[in-house]
Length: 79
Image (cartoon, rainbow, N blue to C red; front, side):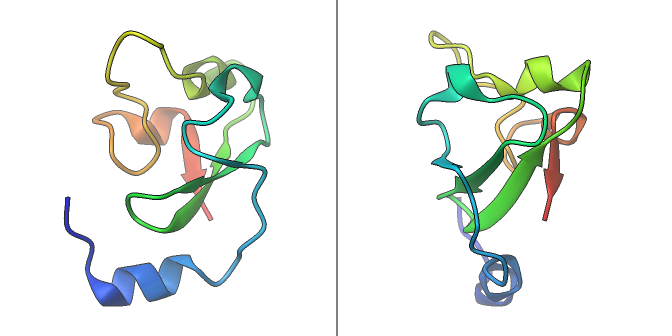
């Protein structure tokens, strides 16, 4: 997955995050901020009831992976 240099520069303006995705995904709750290493962006887990989608299933590729998965915007806000 290739990321445009301009997009990466736009994403790195706010560097505060709690985890690097998908580390400790079982702890993700509404408001949790993660760094997505694949695109360099920070994402924040949406409020209930959508925060349940932020937790990564251990045995599958998540369709909710921030910025990457097919349905990521249901679970995450890009900051």
